[in-house]
Length: 379
Ligand code: MG
Ligand code: ZN
Image (cartoon, rainbow, N blue to C red; front, top):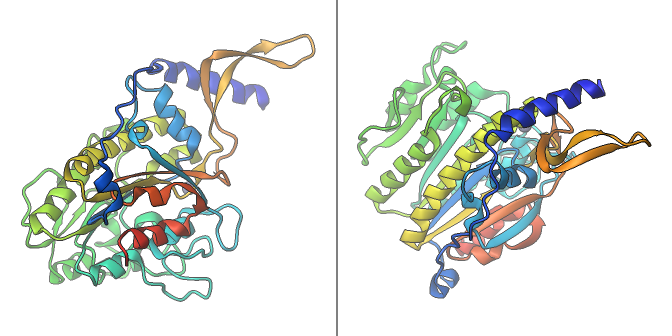
């Protein structure tokens, strides 16, 4: 068994090494004027890499031909992501902590330990005339995005979650999950309900002209979006671009959450190539968002994850064994290695840029992401 695993890692290292290049240039630090740092932000952009721990972020420094956009941040924090009923969280409890500011049980979407709905940041800010948007590379009804608009006791109730999208205050969403809205087991067509509530629904491409006076839903896959290695292309960056230009047209402050959903799935699969390609796609979108925030000056950007997946590490290559039977390593060859097909309890990095970003340095709980956003907005 052990030998088999090692062979697998060697094979992975081979395929990954083709991409590998350790970039040693000077980081292009973001320009952040002192007067911008202390003022109140107008807009909030929360970027979640599902399952993205420190080793996952680290891989973008080694398996890349340029310095990642992660390296542009100066404000860095660490969060403890423990759930209310478990030392290791799942994505539902983790995202509910960000969205609602509470610790809850694994599987819970927007409900507390007594299974009661808790107001989320989207509901709160939409009452203050904020525009709100959600983007994911999973179905839009999957645990992470769902926690920002739905309230159900189980993340598996994706049809019920789709129902709740229709009555949510969300103005813009993009991702997969069409099958949870139409041709359902219960015969209901939620697309009609969305249209009745002012949504234009698009099931073809992200790159198209849209009417900014309407709400918009892009459902571009029956379930999840394609993997990067299957040809998803620039969906993530293009959707963020589309959302930001939509919000700009409407000239009101906004809250946007963008999720790189499949970093987590690659971790569950113990597939390093899948993981790194998803991570680099996420980093590319982070770069686009940072360029926007740097230019615009009124937007607080927060990058974090709900938890780590895969017990991912960047080990040295095992070259053989010494006379005592201990492994010998080549520390010049990095081998992406997994220790579990599940989640882990590792602390999670938080990167922040823009007005009030300094609130996000230090060590704190995942629930504080919600409370710090409110503090930044003086809400
Ligand atoms: Mg997720
Ligand atoms: Zn997971």
